[in-house]
Amino acid sequence: MVASITEWILSLNGALALTIVFAFTALEASAFVGFLFPGEIAVLLGGVLAFEGRVPLEAVIGVAIAGAVIGDSIGYAVGRRWGHQMLGTVGSRIPFVRHRIDEHLDSAKAFVKRRGGAAVFLGRSPTVAARRNRDQRW
Image 1 (cartoon, rainbow, N blue to C red):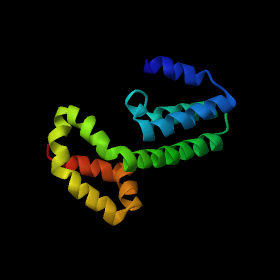
Image 2: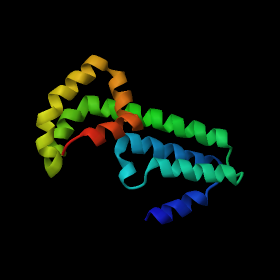
Image 3: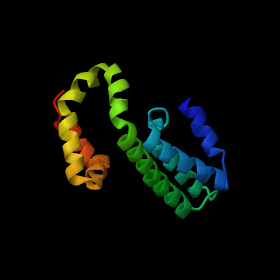
């Protein structure tokens, strides 16, 4: 499936290719499409298209950044509005998450309340996320 999506993106030109790069980066950040096709791959493929001269590199960079920022903002808004309900329904169905939610939810809410957007920004940072994942004991 990933190979066919990759080939399809590499067959595109111009505005449609840029729209796809934007859409995949936005959807990865807001709707978990990244489980099926990571937005980073779409950005890399956009770079390939720029190398081939089919789209401007500056445009690929711009739509990738815009897609990530807009997708993060949508994800934040959805989480703020429906996050607790989603944790109660979807989170309770995932075995390795179910018992961890109750254990850490209050401290996570307090941290976000104290730090606001900075907590979300740092949580999305690859370096912070990698360090956090390395230090966690499952």
